[in-house]
Length: 351
Image (tube, rainbow, N blue to C red; front, side, top):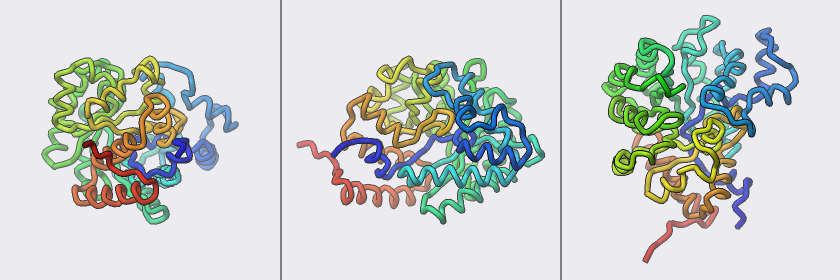
């Protein structure tokens, strides 16, 4: 059995770290811009794609974040957000994703007067339509932004509380890490945790393990976005492992942001061998010019992983999701049955 891109597309997968505003279709950006009479840097799809995607160009996390400016221009109406959410779920479904958590920050979509609540309703509506159209399951993660004031994060946290059990499954802190510590947003996470809402924070991507430490011990992170530099603090790494705090690994974007110097130097396989609950994710379909199946293929080609390794990584994704426990159990049961029946992938029994 050849483990090629088409094979990985067929595998049932979960995507836990995917930004809505970084995952639009180029054609949709052009269409929305025309409808809204927004002037883009170019109307040529190939040129626009080159402007937004990182490709082989390496920059910094800040350079990477700059690529979101064009997509954000066209995502300032409920109709645009609904369409983007529906299309993202469709693209994920066509890539074999059965469950996706879509994250975005409502504060970045208020330029034309849309409220945060209206934006969540729009994303929720788009994802709900996708669940009917494609039989995919979805959830929304609201993002606070490190470089925006903690007061705004608190407002966003309050929105997450309002939409608990109404589409929102978690709360995140995203954006540039250096000079913007998570502990400054601690009040937001107090509100989130007091209301029994799941938390994940971008941490250890462009800054050291201290960032991960703050995410866990100041903000109560249940998962860590990226966590690339966790291995620099072995004691903290053991804590993450012992407490089954999942890492949302995004191989391609970690190279693009210079979080690691190359794929071969990425600690993903080291974490996996240590038994850490690692998951594979895209970060951004468009900005990183990738798909979840492509990330699986990259992991196979870079680290020489086997079918049984991918079985474990796939199950890690569903186990680490912010679904309810019963939903997770049912979905994992179905995925295990499919992996065995359709692909002959059974658990490895060690004598």
